[in-house]
Structure formats: C-alpha cells, structure tokens
Image (cartoon, rainbow, N blue to C red; front, side, top):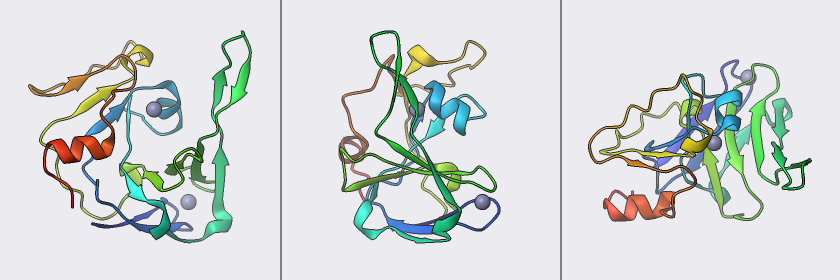
Length: 161
Ligand SMILES: [Zn+2]
Ligand SMILES: [Zn+2]
C-alpha cells in the first residue's frame, strides 16, 4: 500500500510503500505519550525505508530519546524520531539497527488507513495512570514489547498488502 503523509504546517511531505499499514499497535511509553500521543499512546506503522520520498527535508529535526542507561544516568537512544521543527508534528521513527524499516506514525498519514480487526497494547508498564486502556475482546496487552513484530501481526491475520 502506498502511504502519503505530511506535517500540520505542510512544509514536510513524505510517501513510502507499506506492506504493514494497519494501525493496530498502541504504544503507551512515555516517549510516545510526550512527543505525540495526547490520548496516552501513539501508533507506529511499518514501511519500507528504500521507498521513502521526502519533500521539505530542511524542516525536519530529529529527536534521540533520553533513556536510562541502567547505571543511574541517561544515554541517547539510537532511534531517530523525525519531526517538523516548525509545527512539531511527529513524522516517523527510524532505527539504524533495522535500516530497511521506517515506522511512520499513523497520526501523520493522510492516506486512509485500513481499520484493524484487533489491537496490540504495549509498554503498559509506562502507561500514565489517567490513561484507560480501551481494549476490545481479542486485543493483546503487554507490559513490555510483544515478541510479535508488526510484520508478524499482519502475517498472522493475513492482512499483508
Ligand atoms: Zn510542519
Ligand atoms: Zn512508544
């Protein structure tokens, strides 16, 4: 499926191909919540990095999240959270560990996305206390990351496009 996205002020536009475009994965981690998830979670999609086309690249800034280093300090996450530096729209996440993948945020996509038949709620350990998990029957819930990747989920439900 071909996806088109943009920031709110319109200076950044992007497109990419995605075999895994169902917005089923709700991440409740503090990074997603603070940077873009006003309702308490953010939704990442899976896309092909080699098909990414961007206009307005100059308006993009990158945030490397501040992560606990396990020794009482902090270190910068290798993951690149791309956002528009003028309007603040979160655009996509790119991790150098998985160079073939781009994870666009569903909130930045303008193409009409398919409605997922079930959801996966993840990183519930980091959920804010005021956020209610609106889980439907069949939804999966995880305190940490699920083992099932975005690609695995689409394969299990036979929803690859
Ligand atoms: Zn913008
Ligand atoms: Zn997250």
